[in-house]
Image (cartoon, rainbow, N blue to C red):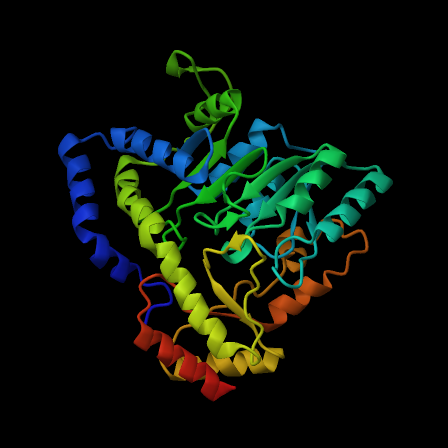
Length: 375
């Protein structure tokens, strides 16, 4: 059994994917081919943004967003304590300081209350300038933007939506990648919309920001092309083969994959209700369940379930075993007295089960039975 079965997805989309790859090979335009422009147009329409600019990976997408807004030395970048290192790794490379916030105990996304406490603490200390908030839609579940946006407006902060795990999810009728001043996503193979390598994208409604993104993606090119370098940039482009692979995957995501993820989650929820803490999705929201994460009663109970699943030939994962504030790379970042109690508790008890749109009911039953046996 696969934790995320990319082979099953390929089998379902094989004809379209193979035709797309063959088309690129026949045309021989491997960088900047027409498929890239077509994909960007369809991604923007899907997310409800004016512009989509593809790039080499999701981390580059975040770094470009930070570069666009001039985030750097002396700036505080606020982020959830439960995420992958890349959310603020790119800003740290530019000299900024990562200020982590505790999570909401239900959604596992950034806690608006903790966010405001940390902003006030930075202001009170006076050493750093509050600059940006990175709202990570963790595990495919959208953040509470009705609470986060007013906080950003109140303190004059840039809002960056890190939708690496949430492409296809929605918050009160709006799709993820449509929130914030700028938003980013990743096409890493295991993501809800993944390519067969690395890839990423940036979304904005601002024409000027879009032009800057395109410039930075190609070595800071100017209006006369890639040899007219007007700023320091990156070499960060999505290649044409990956665009051709993503086009049929994007169609499948919208046509049926999101619905299938809901169906798998619903069966899990029904089976584990009252036995494990199952994912909470707020009213009016749709999670894309990049991961289906449950909380066991204790660390020991979590580890017992994982061990039994392994004995049964069923994979499981922990997303994430260590909160950001406890990672060695962030050992020098200020905490301002925040305890991160919810984040620590989440890491101690979380376990993710196989989740993908091609998980058959007999496989779901096998997983459910094995978890129930362990319990």
